[in-house]
Image (cartoon, rainbow, N blue to C red; front, side, top):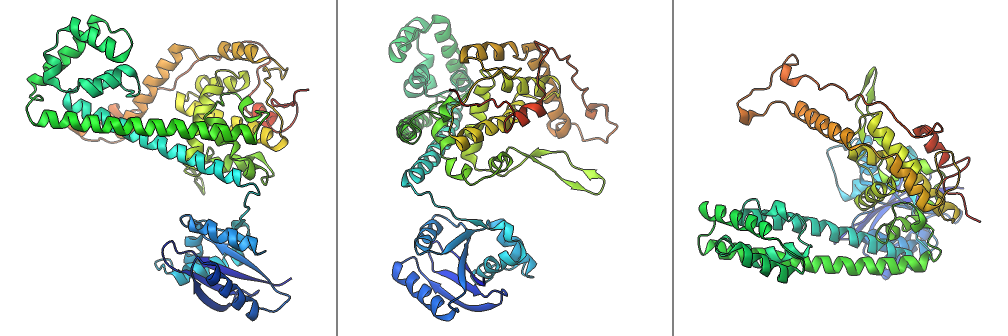
Length: 499
């Protein structure tokens, strides 16, 4: 059956540009229209009058802003097949057409229309969830992530302002949400006022303001830091009072963002309980009230993915391989994947390796056999957690904990087995020292210390020795990482349905 392709360059605040090509991908006509039902219907009527009756039509869009969703939903409701392509693919197609250094609405629309002729596998159908609650959940998850980023930025701003007022004080209160930190940021950010306080009186005042006991020694440390700030000239007026007002203003913004985040998290979890009343997703290790709605929002995507490796690729927790001839680059973490999903998966994997023995085994092998630091070891756990999530969502069944011999165990027993596989603190310390040395080796000697970067023979740039730690795994039936990965998709599955 012959098919015409319509490439639409979506305009966020301007008109949309459409290029129509026939079955031989030759241009037929072009048009412009706006995001109004009458304008879209006029374009569709003109398209229907020009094409033969036996020819079908498909639309290819580039996801620009949020306008493309409205346009795609309207076209799908009219019975048209709608596909999407990433900006990177559109740029590559435009370069293949000989316009690498040109970008216009016409070229973008034509590149979208001709992309199926060159790489039909690179266009993906736009599948809208039938239930609008899924769109509501996805929007709430993204909103919670944006609030989390704003809270992190506000926290950094508060710490920078407090360090400017009283150097060294922010390191004692890294979390502004704590009651004692709230009292310090709100009432005691002026170095002159804090330096005049007696430690005994200050301890009683902070105890009353924060609701937790504050010792005299802690209060004396705060007074000493304030006196040092006064000696450095940080108590001069009116600059000191202006800085205190700025800290108070930033603290109010921080509290407002935190309150809004809690409300959004509560709304997301209520919607999660409505969409997953059996709590299958929350039965996964490391998944709580914040991560469960985010991971459940992947269900419309998982329903149309045939294999778990595609979910791994979507998340971005896959190595980026660079190979050319005999040169093989060092594998690094891919930049693909949405940021909100990467954040949730990392937090869930860090908690899951403490309660699931199989995931604890993956984490232990990454640190003790491969010498990976904590962050890299947690990232190695994420793909295995994704395999279990894929199974839970695809087969709609709860997760079942299993030991290293694939035997079902209770959650409490699984936690005990995972704690037995914990990495010793001595190994963690040595890995931190080694990672710090490797980072210094990559950066080279500091110019601030009066050194100049030398050649490869410089003894200061010699690569630190590899960490050699004997593997001591309790039991003789330990599974390898490869077997754990395979067991997530076939065989005696770790998320086998409970009777």
